[in-house]
Amino acid sequence: MLELTGLLIFIAAFLGLVFLISTGSILYFKQMTEAEQEKQSFKTLRKLGFDVDMIMKGIIRKQAIVFLLPLSIGMLHSIFAIKAASFMIRSDTIFPASIAMTSYTVIYFVFALFTIGYYRNIVKNAMS
Image (tube, rainbow, N blue to C red; front, side):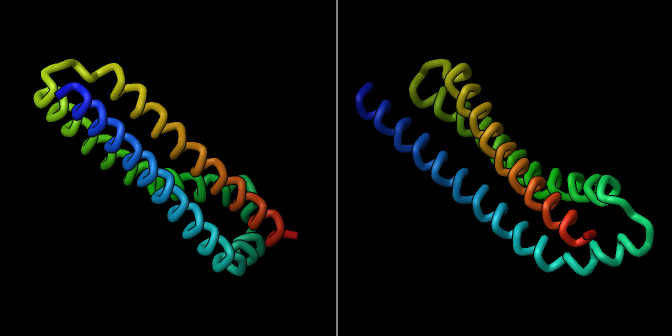
């Protein structure tokens, strides 16, 4: 029974990691596409007197919503899954689950940083 439980936990963790990386990648590439489409808007904002920092503040707020919404829904789902797993294996899984949730948050944060960096390059090039 212990081997089966360990195998199920490994499979669930692996699938969760693959799902996380794929959703982070999809969000990243979607935001890259949007950044390319918004180049003209950035030029217009520049003509209206906005500077790079002002535009980037708006972009950071937008990216926070784009990345934090799925992450928070996933974390909420994980909390319920942890409670169910703890009940099924009759063990406390809070510590390993906390490590997994922290690593998932770090991965999403890295995707968000890459996206903001890409947007910064697009905005700077559009303003030149």
